[in-house]
Length: 146
Image (cartoon, rainbow, N blue to C red; front, top):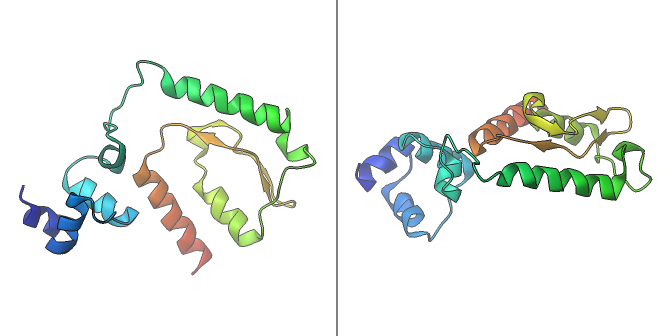
């Protein structure tokens, strides 16, 4: 595929595509998603070189998640929402926006909240792609700003 064809498929100008390819500019997440789709890959792969069906044979992700869980426990104890220093979300709008980003099927730690106190437990999700995050963010914003 030529640069011109890729630009057309991604719905950007040839000049913009040239800037992205040279690294002069970074595309917005929505543009990056369209480029990835045009190339039949993922945004993760384009940004980080992570293949679509990445298998963590060395266990890096598993170890990272375990360390993140330990750090949350160290900072906030068994129940983070009861910790005296644990914060709150600034308002209902932002609380609901953030809760809309959490995919319970991908949660490996946290993911629960206290609505009345506008608190969300520290949350770790696994197997989340940029496309999924972008789509969830767009959905949450549509709900908030309609």
